[in-house]
Image (tube, rainbow, N blue to C red):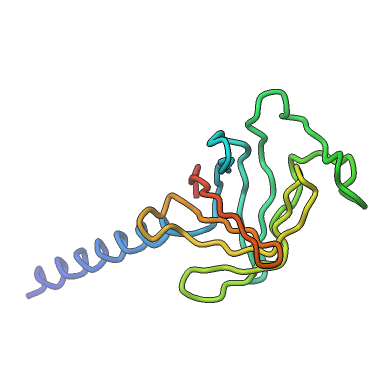
Length: 149
């Protein structure tokens, strides 16, 4: 009987570990490669993280050759001529349930525009993040690819 309980503990521990690994593999947080939805070319690596229950994201690296040290030339205010690497582009986005996050701040440094946004993992591939930016009733959706996280 004692041997049977030991096996059950190990089996339970194994199930718990598998569940933990699959749950963490499906987190929206981590590093993502942005893909230009018009050209299909990789543009940047974005780190998405949680702080005080809200989602944030900043540029970790620019992947476009010759733009690695790009500045936000079109930006206004405190972002004017600041390096794009390190810049927060996602701010205070809230989890609304069902794995979806919505907010008012998805910043595109290339266009120097801020959009409302919605982000969610592709239900068919958790290594793809759907990122939708809204301007009034018009929207555009990009698919970002998981780098790590």
